[in-house]
Amino acid sequence: MSERDSPMSVWRGGRANRSARIERSTAETKVLVELDLDGTGVADIATGIGFFDHMLGQIAKHGSIDLRVATEGDLEVDAHHTVEDTSLALGAALAEALGDKRGIRRYGAALIPLDEVLVQAAVDLSGRPYVVHDEPAAIAPRIGPIYPTSLTRHVWESLGHSARMTLHVSVLRAGRPGSQPDAHHVVEAQFKAFARALRDAVAPDPRAAGVPSTKGVL
Image (cartoon, rainbow, N blue to C red; front, side, top):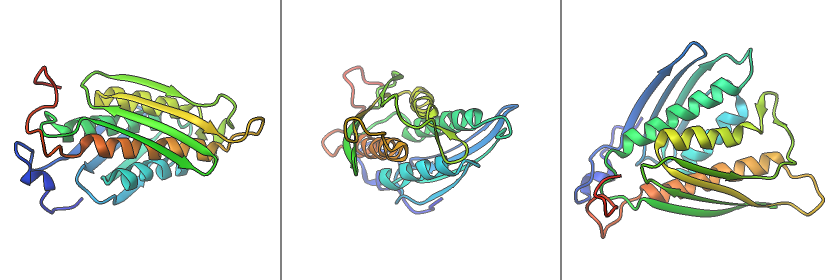
């Protein structure tokens, strides 16, 4: 992770360091997540699931987050525990790095095309976990040798609840009517849209020094 000074250090009321390190160990997985919200998109991802690594790399790149993920999971069983526990740890790291959320924009939204696919994501760093996910039911059941596409919803549910955010991810268009959606494009566009929405939500608000809520806490 970068050792440089964070841009947050110049914000009025902001935290000087928005980084986090989370370790999560169970009988099924061992997960390490390190992130810096004020990074440049550097990623070092190793979960044992190639496609999932690629998707987490999208969050880093398009969210401008420096991200390291190292997961050892029971892949001899299936991918479920590895994906779930990695997503939970990533959400916990986001929550820790954000701290009291003083001086951030709080809300972020993105509309992202990927060729024939169009995805909308919206983030509210509300402190209230709530996830809405909508994607076509007809996409291929697997991408690559081990990633079930049914787990994408579980990524957002696990990450959103662990990060204590409100998150909406909706696939608005998945190709021509009557054609089989490209599952890779459908899932990848979701991760890119989430990344861009998150980037906006965690960004500084130069007009607001305090917590962005009338309650005074998020």
